[in-house]
Image 1: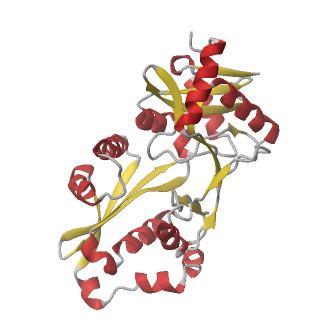
Image 2 (image 1 turned 90 degrees about the vertical axis):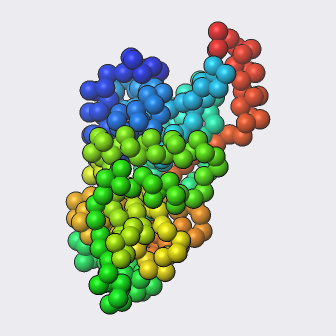
Length: 303
């Protein structure tokens, strides 16, 4: 009933049709996004004749395939015309039985009987901008009211990847290693040149002090990065940029904040009064992977 297809076996026309007509449609499951983020290291579990699909990205360690979510790819899971708990559970069972899983996220529409850890995400659904703005917290509305000096000496511009690159590299925080930065920049560059990613910059006295990166596809606009010059945090340029993108897109597109696990980030996002949309994730520590690898070897799965 469920088939496992390697990348070169996927019917991408049928895959795209299933995703487009699915109740759970997400830009992060599209071929282009997965090709960029995983470097084409992904395959698909298919139910019947593409009635439901589950993309499965992976990495290789010492020649062993390990399921791991690519950077900037928040949600995957099962995509079908109507979310079905029995089908979702069948995919989950197949995934856990046949793969070594380090980290794999479902999406916020997938209903499961199996208890998995939930992670936070925030969305604003399409509506008139006036209605959306009216729900902002009083603090967020204050942040959006610039004083005269800032208003007279600031502007918002859409800039190129090349213009954004150095600022992002200098102001990206929270990375564990240098290779993470190069991976993020590779994804940003490829997405920009395929016309999915846009960089909005807040200039103050002709100097960039904030940039946000937003990815647009599948009737969604996703916030993939917020980068700030620490010396100018009090000017609230990031809030201005996010509000501007919301104002320009919210009547027709979902605005996806792409996160909210860290307390300070959650507090910032909640100021826009989005809806909390948690999603389930499978996570296994490395020691558990070694145990499962041993059982796989005994059963001959890697031979």
